[in-house]
Image 1: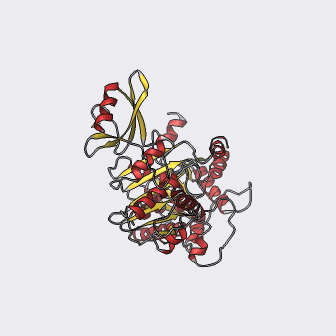
Image 2: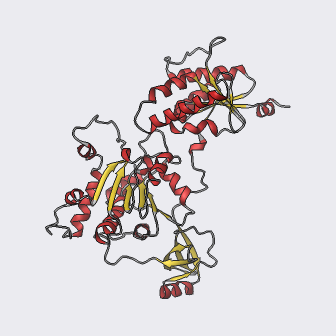
Length: 451
């Protein structure tokens, strides 16, 4: 048997880095029959996070509870059997050979690497470090030790779901569709609930129709343009038209919109929220929230009460509200008709509320239009917390750009927005649209494409 084949037959052991546990405290349970090793350095680093009043602190405390509960089944030093059949160990070298750190300072990362190197040299099993830190994987490679990303954090997708597709049909089908407004799904297979389809006529690509899948009635419904606009906002491309169609449909409880900067995600969402909450009064109010993550260096603590502290973070929301109310003209709730922004009166009347996601745990939110902006900065667990707050009659809209992430613990495939899109794409209560064309300005679109 070749050395490579022998290596394949060796049992496997995965050493978890601190960042994996801070992202997912249940990571110790996902390696099935393989062993899991937690270096003592990781325990020390987790201990420093346990008092943080955020998601990272919650995960640190949860992980400590998991380990403490395992002590009832045996010694963490000798190994405790996991549900999948593997064993979990907490590694602490009390005696024996120690791999010296010769490549840098005595930091937590380097102590973890020394543990990985020592266990690798001991032999008897394949050892791999599981870390979300790119530099740690590079160091392992330089040391000749296996290292892997935490794949359980990533959504497994063959191709990212955009919420829209194209199909070619006979020209007569499109003619009949415009006359009746709907048609049976028929031979158009593999369509998801609320997916949009651009139908093209055979031999005549300029003859098209846009429809939305209605799986409850097993039909395709024609998507029409809004002649009067929504609070002065008109769709400038087909993706924006698709987004408006979902946002104005009260039967769709969850809408996810992603796309690069300037595609109109937040503006369209707020316009439909004002229409539904203020004009049609389908919802009692519009609640707008977003995670608090700075771009670049943070400026430190902000003065004032919660409203004053939150004001800088909500500037993008206020900018869009100012544009919408100015565009809409005279505000039917006391506006002066001179185009002056009046969103403050809506805030005072609590018809629009803005708040950070920090305070959403434990709440119940009935009959509200809930907007979660910049959702790409949320973890899947945080998204679950938000969505489980939705009460009867509430619509949740999540917007964001998976490629503009400020949260160091998520990436384009592991963030809460991408996770939600993938998990809900087969649901009859959820719809998704990916917006691709920038409409903010020519400069903004070029910047998004070239920089």
